[in-house]
Length: 323
Image (cartoon, rainbow, N blue to C red; front, side):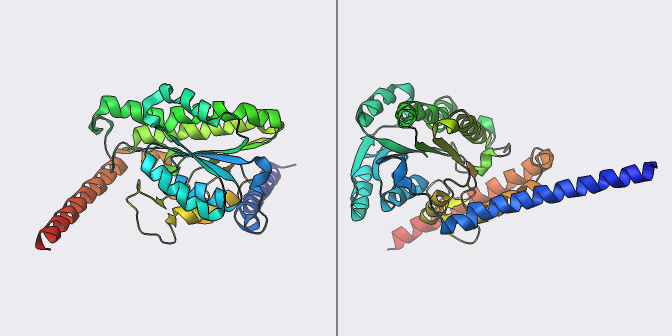
């Protein structure tokens, strides 16, 4: 056999391998985002109660409402008692029970004994670890974090510590019953290293890795641990950006993301975000993302954004004075 023939055979195997890989990805995408719209897992089979952290706005509020709509009683966990009571009243329309727990996840370890006491005796089938925070409303260098000493601790406590600690509280009951679902909300900002969002990006990759490892450890015991890594969703954290074909409303995102349960343990949450993730991986490789040129461009975007916000605020103040 000549060298040319060997290369041809090797090339043929390589092409077949990549075609099979592409076919598998297409099937997974179809199952996750198309088939899931037709066949939903009955979330009530996991247990009576769902616990949602950061439940008073954005994705957390949307998950809580959607879980109640699908027949679960909901424990709402957040820091504002007034907002908790308001969301609980909204959920009343679904005829489900609610409980509220007022805690501030930035306080760290001290809050979890009180949460454990409130959850005692409940059949918790689903946990949504959603609570999270950013440290700046624009792209910023690490040393530009406002009130850095306090803010760093708060971000780590809220975005990272909350996930394993809440998991520790509910997982034993799930293992005992042999069923349960834990949904951890990560972010596309944690899929790849993101300069000028360094701390936020790092906390989100922690959520992703913790979810994947925990799923591997406990799937044989009937526990599903799903990591959800969305792109832009219109929430307070994203300044309620306008909804379009790229940006999802929180309610629509939660509905589509919950449909993927049982079809995928790692998901962007919806087809639009999955396609954006694929495009970004191709068009914006890590070496370019980490380059000084790209960082400068992000910095310019941040400066322009801050200028626009200042102008908008000044116009709003002028409008108030004229009225």
